[in-house]
Image (cartoon, rainbow, N blue to C red; front, side, top):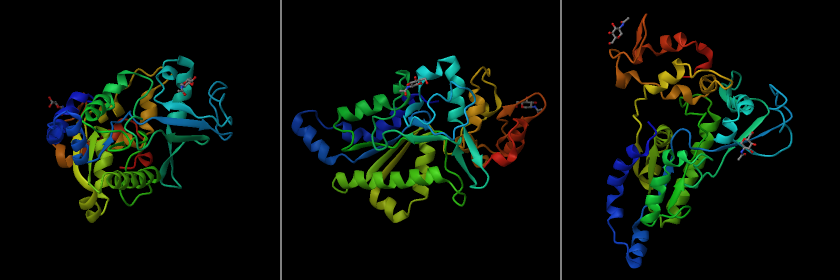
Length: 314
Ligand SMILES: *[C@@H]1O[C@H](CO)[C@@H](O)[C@H](O)[C@H]1NC(C)=O
Ligand SMILES: *[C@@H]1O[C@H](CO)[C@@H](O)[C@H](O)[C@H]1NC(C)=O
C-alpha cells in the first residue's frame, strides 16, 4: 500500500515537462527559474514525532517513567530501535496512544506526554532511524526531484504531520488538524513567495492525500486559484481504503505492545474507512462466518470489532 512505485508514475507524468529540460548548467539554471515549487505530504508513518514527559505523566512502570520531568525530547515515532526493545515497547505504546477528551470533544495526548512533529517545512524530515522507511517516505522521489534542480527549503518543501490525528468534520473541534492547516497555509504562501509568486504543486502519498484534500477543500477558492497549481494524489483512493478495516478488526498477535490497541486510539484510525458513496452497499468488504459487512454497515462493523461508540468520531 505504501510503496513508492505507486507514487512515481502519476508524479512523473505531471513533472515530465520539467524533467525534459537538458542537464547542462545553463539549462539547469533556466530550469530552476521555471520550476513550480513543490510541497510534499508523505504517507501515514512518515511524520516524525518527538516527545517529552512532564511530572503529570502517570507511568505504567518505573522504566516508562525514567524520563519524567527531565525536559529532554526523545524520538517517539518512529523509533525502530526503541520499538525492538521488548521492555521499552510497552512504554512506547502507552506514550503514543491518544485519549478522547469528551469535554474538549477532541483527541489529546495521554496527560503528561508533550509531543511535536519534527522538521515541518522540509522534505528531508520524513525519515526515521529505519532505512527501509526511506523508500516508503518519498525518499527516492525527493532525490529524483533534486536531480532535476529542486532544492529543499528553496523550491521543495515538506509537510509532515502527526500520524495519530486526522481531519474531523468541519464543525467539530480539531485542534491538531487546525494547527496543521495554519502551518500548511503559511508554508504554501512562503513557497510561492520564494519562487517569484509561482503557484505550488502539492504532491501527496497515501494518508497525506486525505490531509491535502481536506486542506484544499477548506481553503477559500480564490486562495487556491492563486497559490495551488496542481494537486497530485498518489496511492490513495479518496473514497477510503479497505485495509483500514483489517487494522481495526484483526489481532496483530498482541504481545507486550498490541499495536492494534494503540492504533485504535488514534483519531486517524477511523477517517480512512471505505465510504458507501464509493464502495456502495452491495460488495462485502469484511466476510465473517455469521455476517458480511459492506461500506454501509460501518456502525455495525465498528461495534462488532468492539469499539465503544462514544470514542468514535466519524
Ligand atoms: C529511541 O528509544 C530508545 C529507548 O527508549 C532511546 O534510548 C533512544 O534515545 C530513542 N531514540 C531517539 C533518537 O530518541
Ligand atoms: C458473504 O460474502 C461471501 C462472498 O461474497 C458469500 O459467499 C457469503 O455467502 C456471504 N455470507 C453471508 C453470511 O452473507
